[in-house]
Image (tube, rainbow, N blue to C red; front, side):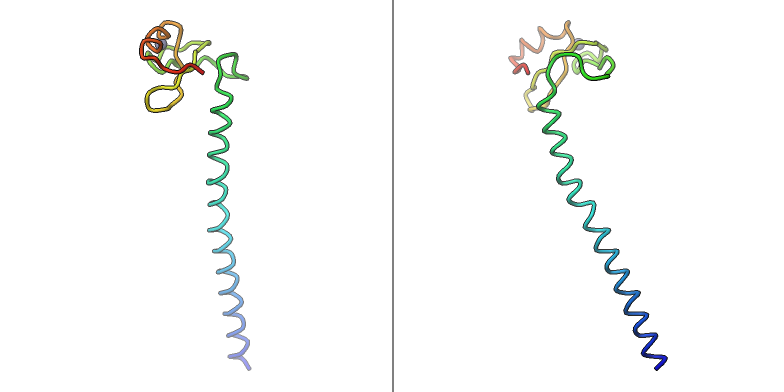
Length: 99
Ligand SMILES: [Zn+2]
């Protein structure tokens, strides 16, 4: 009788641990898989020249000089880069696509 109760308690505890472990493992995977690319996609769509909402001057990707107005280009490796006024000619010389 006592063994039966202990066995039931152990089973319940094991089941609870397994259930928590499964939930804990399952939860972060879809979150990181879905949210990150969605954010990246949104950022890609929105990263156009113009006043960014509440953002301060950002550094130029080429000379690191902070500039309130950056022009955005896609570089050779497909990344979006912000280019200050002075470096715009460099980006144009590299024939980068402007966003
Ligand atoms: Zn620059």
